[in-house]
Length: 131
Length: 278
Image (cartoon, rainbow over all chains, first blue to last red; front, side, top):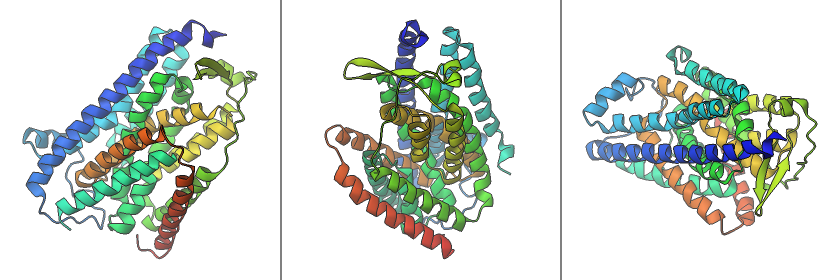
């Protein structure tokens, strides 16, 4: 009965760190999104919105380079997108952390499972999928 | 509509969606998408992009609390994430090749199904019969705390549950929702694990699943900062408050009222999809 012995307590530590990691990730990214939102509203609150038809290039904020340039100029929309990216990478960071904790526990089966999940996400990072 | 007015309306709508979504267990996405498309005339692809971001925020936020309590089965979650991430990316890739009308119709049907699942009486079929070979090999059988003591449970039909997660992942990637209803079915009815474990583990998996498809949406420009900002902030505040209220009340009556509202939204989505208006 491995699962109610030593491993359970090892898992408990992992659970505490995992929980903290997720919470810090959400709070940080939401703070960035909020800051970006305030700047965005101050500069363009009177503009008119038009989201009736999907236009892939409209926001101009779908590449890391564009977002980086925008953040340097304190552009509100770019800061929102930066916060959104931080949020997207919060669960990914959780997967990376889990892989290391399974490695410390010498649970190699789950190291492989974690790596598989990570590889799938890395594949999605390639923009060739979008077409 | 000006940016300021749009932001305020979406913020309020997303707050309500998050509040009711967390109190009923449906999640914010299934409410914010009809709101954006039917009421504000937003293109469904933008609505999906904004919704998936709110799914990451709410699921990571609540997973943080559940994980610390030791209810979540992390091994089971990680294993099933192989299925949900692959299929979520697949769903996110194909979503733009599908006519928005069909997406609206599929969305309406998932909404109807979720409403039915919400009011149905749940039967706990969990036990501690640890004879499943795959579950034993993957060390999926686990424990969870009940009233101060530790209870053991076994995981059944791992293959069936894994296949069902493929379906849940495709729906999640296609529609930009967490598809918690499908995940919980896979775990409650097929793998037969206790409710508290299945809901928290489904929630735990949702963040990674949503992140996988969110990256595809991001590249495609479906995540517009002007929509994603009020949606994410509104849903997160609403669902955090909803979870606090849930600790003190049992929202059985609210669920029935809400099932009616969701059914109405679902029929609207299906009708507008068929009429080709979305």
